[in-house]
Image 1 (cartoon, rainbow, N blue to C red):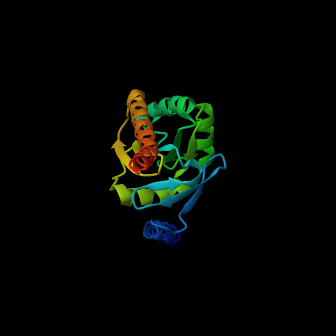
Image 2 (cartoon, rainbow, N blue to C red; image 1 turned 30 degrees about the horizontal axis):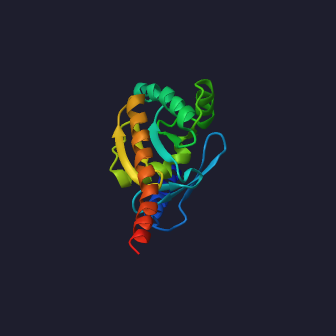
Image 3 (cartoon, one colour; image 1 turned 90 degrees about the vertical axis):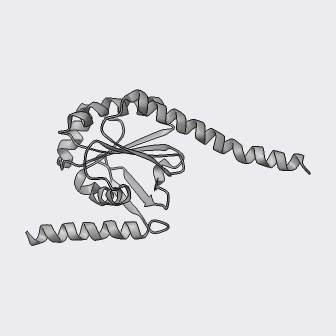
Length: 192
């Protein structure tokens, strides 16, 4: 029992350390169930994931025994197919399904996005809980824009069309953001 307590204490302290380093520390590297390494870096306004810079990120906390969570899986599969060059989905399983079972689940359901098991993802779970005041209800979705800025968080299932609406809105905002510097530099050149 003391070993378990020490492990949780170590994970908790690690999460606090990550939180303290938000604006420039080393961050956190987690390995997905398929062996992909994802490096997470807390920022003042959100979360950067090195592999997904420039993409909208859906970071969902879910469980294999949660009916609404299971209903969201096909939505994320479809959205990843449709917007894969603009969207990254990262799902952290929080009901402690063993990694080998989770890997079989992902394969049998055709999951085409990143999945992290609970034990691996515990530091990220703690970090997001602290930042968003998340109480543990699932599914819990956090959305980050193309610059890694936190956009919104949602407890409960969102329909696919609502998720697609978020993607389209963030794409429009990003397009305007990219145009803005070019427009202002043309205006300043015209005024000379």
